[in-house]
Amino acid sequence: VLTARQFEPELRFPFLVLLVSGGHCQILVARGVGDYAMLGGTLDDSLGEAYDKSARMLGLDVGGGGGPALENLAREGDPLAVKFGVPMKNRKDCHFSFAGLKTAVRL
Image: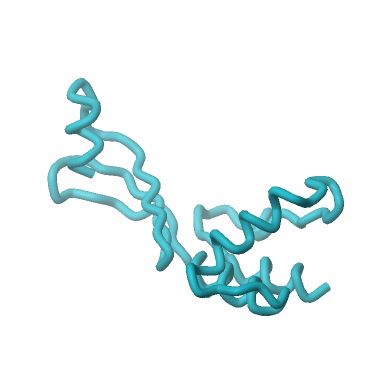
C-alpha cells in the first residue's frame, strides 16, 4: 500500500487496494498507514494454484509456473472458443473463488 503512494504522491486515504499474488488475493480499503479493512479475499484455491493445476491438466510444462504456460497457449487460441461462467455472481460480497477455473478446464 505504501508503494502505491510512492508512485502516486497525491494519493490520499482512504483508497481501494487490490492485492494479487500467486498466493491468495484480497480487496482492501486502506484507511491509513497500517489501517486496512478487508472487503474480500480468496476462499479456496489461490490463483497460482488454479493456474498450475489447470496447466497440468492440459499437459503443459509448468516449470516456469502454470500462469505463463497458460498465457503462452492462450496467445495461440481463439478467445471465443470457450465460454467461462461468472463465478459467485449471486454473492453479495467481494470474495474470490478460482476453483471454478479448474472445473471449466476439465469440461
